Structure formats: structure tokens, C-alpha cells
Length: 121
Image (cartoon, rainbow, N blue to C red):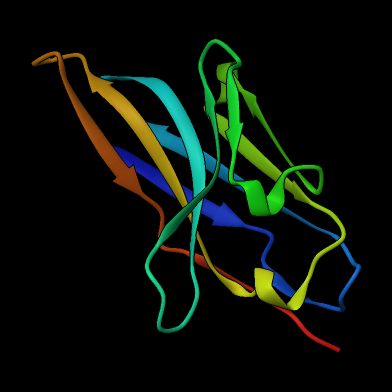
């Protein structure tokens, strides 16, 4: 089993910055990729950014140039640095881990509990 614990959400003014963190813990797994998704009220959950264990990154067009995802493979931790925040970035942000369960060699998705990010003046 993999447990994901997120931190770093909060209230920030437009143009401000926040940094989200997510740590994966547990045993018997290997992380293939970790990422951040977000869900605003009345909208579907959407991908924000993802990073693979090899360092490949991908971003939603709406956050390119403003958000940066990074990871620490040794600590199974992923970060999301969010700059130049806009009101439309307001959402619950969820950490995701794409992991290989070593016992049965099956891939599974794991999710954090979510952290609220509110961008408002």
C-alpha cells in the first residue's frame, strides 16, 4: 500500500506563490510517476503536472511557465511550485502516484486526500 500526504495549500492573493508537497510512504512498491491534479467546484478533475521517475515532465497548457513540478526519487516526494497564481487556479489539488506493486507486478494509482488552494484578493 502507498499513502500520500500532501501539504502546502492555502489562501494567496493573485500574483502570489505557493508550494505544494506530497510524500509517498509505505512498502512493496516502486514509483513510476507522480503528479498533481486539481478539481474546481462544478468541474472535472484535471491534470496539472506530472513527473516520471526518469525526470520527464508534462504540464497542462494553463500552467506552463507558471508552475514547476520537481521530485526527489530517494524520498518519494513531489513538489509543485506555483507562481503568478490566478483566481482560476483555485481548486482542490490532489497528489497522484502511479506505482508498481512489487508483489504482483501490477500498476496502481494512488491519491492523496487533497489540499485546498484559493487565489483571491
